[in-house]
Amino acid sequence: MKRSCIVLAAGVLSLSASAMAQPVKVFVLAGQSNMVGFGVGADLPVELRSQPDIWYDHFNPDARQGGPYAAATSTDWGPLEPKGEARRYGPEITFGRAIAAAYPEHRIAIVKVSQGGTNLVDHWGRGLPPDPESLYKSQLYHALLGKLDSATYADDRALEYPEEVTRLDNALARLESEGHEVEIAALVWMQGENEAGWSAAFRYGDALRAFIAAVRGDLGVPDLPVVLGRVSDNLYPANGGPIAVGREANIDAVRAAQVTVAEEDPRVAWVDTDDFAPRSPDDTYHFDSAAYQVLGQRFADAYIALASAEGSSSASSATGAGSAGAAGGDATTGSSGSAGVGSSATGGGSGATGSSSAATGGAGSAGADGGGVTVGSSGATATTGTGSAGSAAGSSGAAPVGAGSSDGCGCGMAGGGGPGATAAAVGLAALAGLRRRRPRGRQAG
Image (cartoon, rainbow, N blue to C red):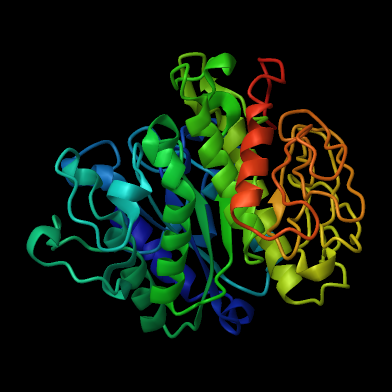
């Protein structure tokens, strides 16, 4: 990083006595290429092109081979801004802004580690050996956590990049050296497109659970909030996507697993990306600039809903979001500045539901029996009844209509049902019905 950024970061660290009185809220953003982001820096509003009040530490393993992100690797905290030769950004820009607005008494810090074309099986799992086919994508769990990683790397698991400056451990140490108390606030995870193209899709749920458990365990935060971005239906071949005909079930499996993991864990939320326009007709893996801005807002809304639900009983309303569902369901929330909507569900433990336009992001529903929060929609209206399935609000433009119905997202569990195989089966069946339900040419924003 240029010396000017280092000086700026050092200066910012000394600012705001009121913010210094509260712990620095550190958010960990990680995943593959849609976390890296293909947003064009020039497309951002001027006020978002550099945000020195939000601290940012960035690493993309592309730097290991001298790629376009090599110069973007942080050596100290700097302002939140697009990175790399192309000045690209992902969801971090609007995420940081929304979180800073929601928590003005805290300083906000973001640590982001992301690399395109990576998966949980070969690259992100704790204690993995190097990937011989893509060495620079290897052992990303350790690249993220560093000394906080409890795994042993010896023999065939020896670190491929043992001298690498790792992210989170060093970023936290820098904060603590300045005398700051630190709160590791959440993990935000945008990943799964890789597995959606091959057989690892059918193990994605278990791999994701293991990854979340490992991060929570190594950070010593057993209830760490986690926000997931569900992979987009842009991937389907019927929608012009890049994944081959005949592998739709793989996409279904990843999408269903992300929803199921969220709905079985009250400290996990998922957000919808189905209404996002692709970057171009030739690149439907990635989103356009506007979509990354909306995605960051949705991630922030989901975290705020989780944090609000944690601070209130299941009968009380989550601040600025929907009401918490009965039986421990979390709150729903709108996005992009929309008002939170929804009310508490009764009887079946389903979370609150609501809707909004695609421009603002509709509120999805919490899963039954303590399921996670869902944020963002394509603008359809969602309704639930007592004991109904905790469906996502119009993830593909259809409205859920009944308990356990596959008309709509159907991603939740039927009232009274437990997580696991039943929820996964419901999710797979419902998602398969959504492969081609909305017109092309959608615009995010």
